[in-house]
Length: 355
Image (cartoon, rainbow, N blue to C red; front, side, top):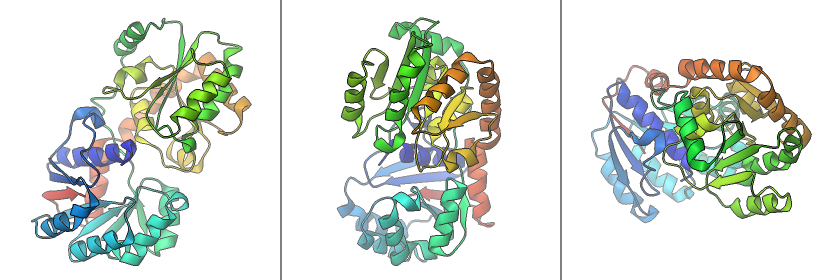
């Protein structure tokens, strides 16, 4: 399961836990990563190592005294969704759509044909645009519930940023760009790399940190070699504590296409980082211009200009301050859990499961 989906599940469990709910998590694809949301996970977690064991666990779950289920969609065959429907059709559950219609067509068809979407108490998505298209597809309303973070774990900290710079041998004057995302083509990391020569003409002392893993890593490293940027771009496969990376960065950059705002953006906001984001409709709808600058991801010149604008101007500091205020107002665990409670329509949950 992608890291961002894991963080999404854990953040919801933590949010419900902060409101006093007892939470059980059941994960089909192995244990959830321990460093999600600072390593803090509310409730009990059960791991199913293979889909072959799914019928057994569904039978167990269907007999469990649980007030409400939240089912996160994933790429399973339609036959498995029919099993899930058989187990949950008589129980109240929310269906959380983890992918957009335009890149999850087969998943949406499986959810529709199996009856899982039709019989859910409510359908949930992370952005308004995803919700609108999914609503048209399923013929019923889809509610928007954003990702959430723990503001006590993600916060501005110059000390943490300087400590990491020292450990990595990066001077205080060096400008640092940061992307935290899966190494996939759709994340647009290659566009940022292609824009760096234009940035380097004005800022010779710059580093671009890319934190993540994925199938596109070899292509990204090859691109850096072709452009002579091996000493500028640094790849970090995994980082247990992301707080120092956010606070080391001068600008957080994300050129993802066709996706809702990821939790890494919200974490960057909570750390008061100015953000340069792709001008895709889901980013634009989620964040006001006071918190982020949006540029076309495929235009290297405009992307370079956007980076330079945030590195050069006083706008960046004010943008970072506004971003943190916006994150605290809209993207905390508690705010997200309250949205889920509202969708439960008065069914006050005391034992919730995220499956």
